[in-house]
Image 1 (cartoon, protein in one colour):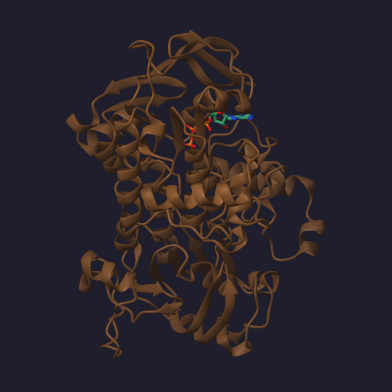
Image 2 (cartoon, helix red, strand yellow; image 1 turned 60 degrees about the vertical axis):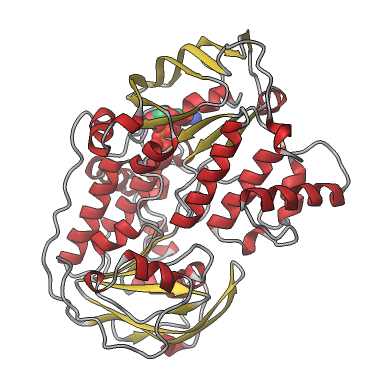
Length: 517
Ligand code: ATP
């Protein structure tokens, strides 16, 4: 395929997509309230809004997944009654979701072929490889999806969308699991696509990315459009204020001095998880300390978290929890000693999609037995506390968690674990898909938990987040862990070099265990 394949010949200067007066209710929630939204050919429009503002709902309507209660949609000036994603694709619309829709057991190529008209596999593979090379979206067509990191899965989703030669590409939080170099590559791809006429809707909570990529930003709040601005002419704080109606809460670090070692990892070796092995990893985390682990997705983070959380077992003394060897114990047994885990994948791993908020509230209690003994109201009481304390926007506690907006679900999962007052907490991407206000609230909760003596491991691809939270930083690359550094002792540039595996061979002086400034 050549760039020319993407060139559209608009019949007029009609918008590629024009939505007028779109209203959508879910029970008592008005997800979209008389929303008008348009995108011109070749335009990159950012859709910004707090969690639950109605962005995904609006784009699901454009993509034919949901039908509006009221309102109109026009594509290139012609009214379209888009009744299914198949219909949307036939109109040249593609959408990449926050939650990936890939079959884990199938290969990359099989997953991509599923959404395309029938063609010989060799031909599809050729097109995939050509597109991947052109846009810097490298993937192994024969690789199994369950061996891929989130970043790699994201690339597969993008390739799948691009192979349909979209005239309108909708991306819901596409950079949440990408590292800065991958984001730059993605933006290059998107700009190339826009120059050749493809319209792009970019849903994101990352204000600097919106300012870098989009030429227009539509801001939503509580189901309504509240602003339509050129983001390049706005500061990040001005955009945040437009979105939240107020400034985000500042971080309130509580100063703590690390206490006893709560989690000790010694020469941990793990055979491949998501295609990556862990090679002789050792570190410790003390009470009242946050250890941050930076790295490019797919470098062993999944194997490390699985081994720490007990989802895979190891030598018993490879992991010690509160002084007890637990390497051989499963995750429920480790939870009984006070460990909690917030995994990266919200649905299917952290929460059961088809279950209610109430039922999900007690999922990570110590044991199945304890859960069975619980009074039915326990889940309701706990869910209500999480919803209230973490500002989760939900219509009701009996609502299935899969119907929460992405950011609200993340707040729900973080809240559920934090309120159990863990002694050791493992968190993988704490603020994935969360708006600026809620991200600050979640980070404040982690800092408060540290002040209460919890030992916390944060794995994140957001360096800013790690600098804000961590007392000590490590980098994971090729399944190996770097030496530690206090955040103020290492620059982002040096961290970037380490993320490529290039840290000094000899163990330097250990980072001092002082709290983050
Ligand atoms: P986020 O940034 O967190 O992804 P969003 O702006 O994309 O949020 P939406 O996912 O559009 O928000 O959700 C808007 C509101 O509609 C939320 O309150 C959500 O709970 C509700 N909602 C969305 N889909 C459903 C559904 N199928 N059933 C019930 N409520 C729903």
